[in-house]
Image (tube, rainbow over all chains, first blue to last red; front, side, top):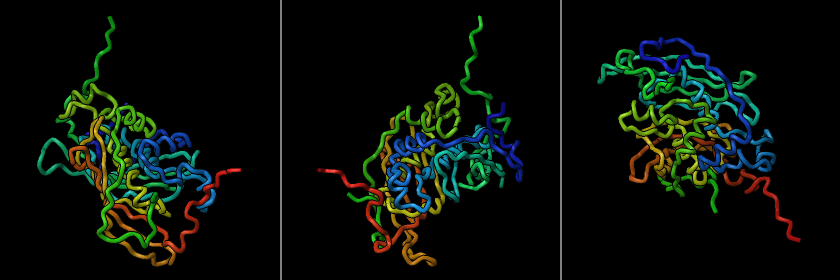
Length: 165
Length: 165
């Protein structure tokens, strides 16, 4: 299986359709809000959502949607990344509700070698997340620091061998 | 207690020191990665972290740090927000490890009335998150859509009254 790419494997214009998708349950949304200290009632108070929103339903917190979309992109984009340098222009384009399923894809925008270190480079990508009906819910660009193939060291650092005897 | 602000309550240059802080446990980090499909071994494989990183320890996934910092800012910044419009320039400035404690503060950069709807406006803020020793770990700017006081409707939408008789 592939987990991440080396710098040489990124080509401007390539699009990766990430797999698999993920259905967001209400339990996960409330758990996410709890461990991230987000107490906005839009996500965890059904009475508030019924009284105060045009949809009438609790909405999934944007950072869970964004984090799932980014998580889905890791095996294609940043599985070998040295660092996540910056996220630019993160937009929550449309609301997501409990039970919605998130899919995502990423386009490679720029690939360039590092100016200071010859063993690595910077890749800029645009990732979008969308729901089961195709509605885009999230989009962002990000820059990641990626090693070159020759400089990358072992393929699976720290991975032990099974003891078979 | 205060939970969010109306548009009239935001003043350019004001700084909100959010409270309380939060210690990030290893269990929360692994749980966060699991529900957001982030399988990068940097966060959940101690052997990988020992073999492949200069720190030798598993690092907290950036989106958990970012989400906690944003969550901490909700009571001061976006508790009354109509929408979270855009996050600009999200940077993970320094690594965070299990056991680190996150604090945060927000500066108001811009306040302006909506051009299309007279009952609301857009507030732009810069939020930083930092650790127990003051090291900045995360910074971002975001724009939120905020109602004016007169147009905001009830203070606690959907909140029932206790039955006391």
